[in-house]
Length: 361
Image (cartoon, rainbow, N blue to C red; front, side):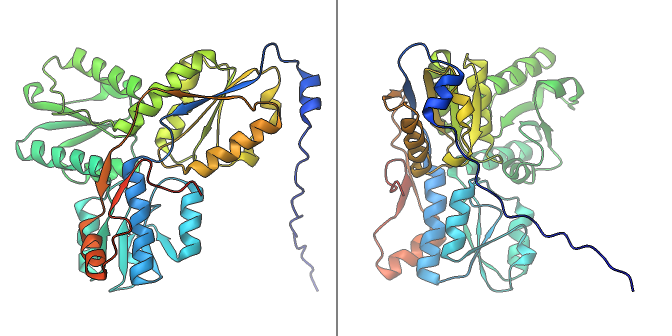
């Protein structure tokens, strides 16, 4: 008789946080402790609209409601919606025929739309209107037989969706390091577009290098990088030179959250880290730190930021100064498929998505 060992995982033991006194003893702080809180931060109009769409679908159609990919790139949001009855899938072939599926805020290609139609699925398109704008630009310039240079991260859902609109005309450029590889048929009929959540600085550096190779490269009709991405980067640029530490609240697969960490470091922050939740903050980061900058990505609910601020207050960073670089008041109508249902049901509680209209919990 042979025996085999069975591995039983040990239960995790919560890490004991060092006390504020222990942290201070490890590295004294020169100067008063304070927090510089970025504004704008957190939810943008497109994210708000998409989350409301799932909530309203669950309310009016009942669970389960299927969502292709993560509705927005945030662990807390996805988990919260799962608890209410949302089921997140990778592809439409995982959705039972005839069921309801919502397309995420990042957009989908025509092939995904066709797949859903072939399976007889009911659909709600929660694509951010600013992403839809880029899709329309891709379709328009492909019809005019342009070569389209799409600046973005290969494999990102938004880039996959945009590239799928005109795969024979689009080349994906991941950044400045790929400019030398670009080949076009006619430089006179070449235009660049971009993923909406990129670093503004890196994107423009890529464009600059592309124009050195192709001086007649055309710009898109309007800026593709979304207002929320730009605003959050501008705010952290103002804070970074004054910050010993910048904490960015956001998920690892959130492109705009990851970019905020990079921008903070590039613009002078001595250290910067991304966390999903306050319990991921390591108190050793506070050693010798007087000024902490705090911001959050465009798919992050404010409650997560407030949790971080409470933790900071426990360690002596109770003085919070909000650094305001822009005011956001953009609102988007909910997806048309959902608006019809809400109108029929007489539901007028939420017809728009946008900043300042969401609860903080």
